[in-house]
Image 1 (cartoon, rainbow, N blue to C red):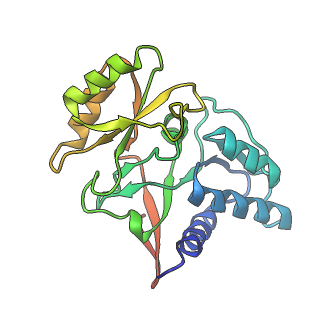
Image 2: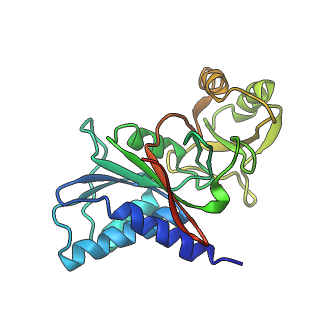
Length: 227
């Protein structure tokens, strides 16, 4: 059994090699992105990098970045030189599902402004079609959420509200997440359009046409997709 954590770290190091001095970098969220943030901090501490500023996609990533010495700025209209993040699924054309970590809205708002979005993952995240392994996270407003869920279910019948304990999961933005089970056959672009047009839906975990490259680590080494 391969060590998935070691593979994630290996992929992260390949992506962090693209970071240059003076860059503004989007800092992703989740277990894989954590390794990238730590590696950027190590390069800053050693003097290998200078004047790098991060834009974090979650409160957790901002706290980690500050802890490892990366200055953090809020998102503003200026473009980012690079964004590095993980993914829950990667299809053959680099379309993604993201959001199992709950940060999909801030991730998308940040990464759409990046000149280059690089994804880091282990080989278990590569799929032949979106929805093969992971549900599609759909961030929804808390007010009237049961009504919103009914509207979502008219488009995607299967799924459930994310509720890890006695109460529903709440995002950094104060919203809930509905994890939709995607059908075996669908058009991601059309489903994205329909979901985004559904009252009460804030954002979806479809990241379509956004990634420029992916570093995927497998037991045999790191493979670059796209680029």
